[in-house]
Length: 97
Image 1 (cartoon, rainbow, N blue to C red):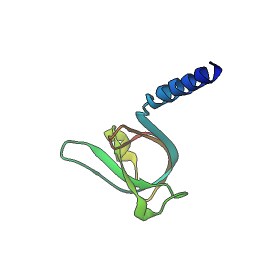
Image 2: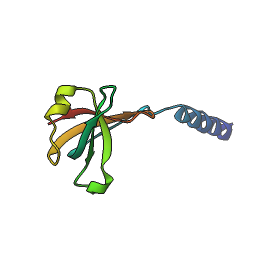
Image 3: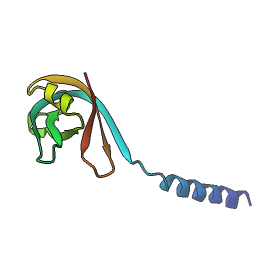
C-alpha cells in the first residue's frame, strides 16, 4: 500500500510539472547596437550583441516599441538593457539605460 501511494504521488507530480508552460523569456545584459532600422509598417528594430558573451557576428534583432527610444539609440554604443521573448515572437527591448 505504501509503495502504491508513493508511485501514485510520483505520477501525479510528473503530470503537474508537465502542464507548466513557460510563455516568456526575460534577459538582462549589456548590449552593443550594431545596426538599426524600421519596416514600412513603422516597426522599429535594432541588431545588437552582448559583448560579454557574444561576438559582433552573433548580433540578434530586437524590436523597439517606442520610436523615441529607437531614435535615441546609437550604433556602436553600449547599453545596459532588459529584453524579453514571448512564445514564438521576436525579442523585444523593454528597458535600456
